[in-house]
Image 1 (cartoon, rainbow, N blue to C red):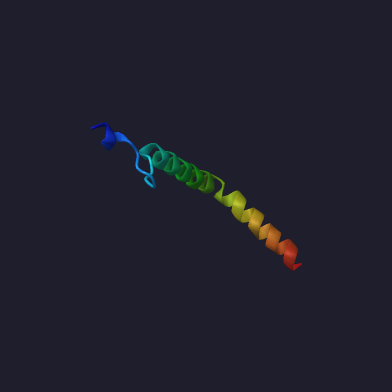
Image 2: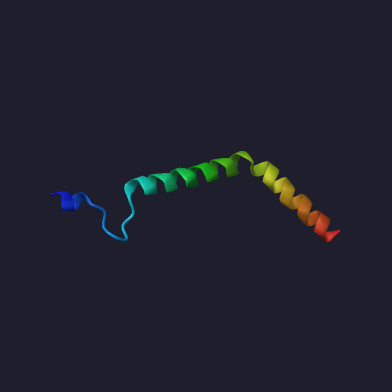
Length: 51
């Protein structure tokens, strides 16, 4: 019974998957919140490089 509960090599623990999902959700949320600032920064940077 306890052998089934042990993690096998190469498998991903469910807690690790939850952490990855939270980090992805956080990255998307930050990207959506600062979307206009990032866009302005990129546009300004390319304008400075072009002229």
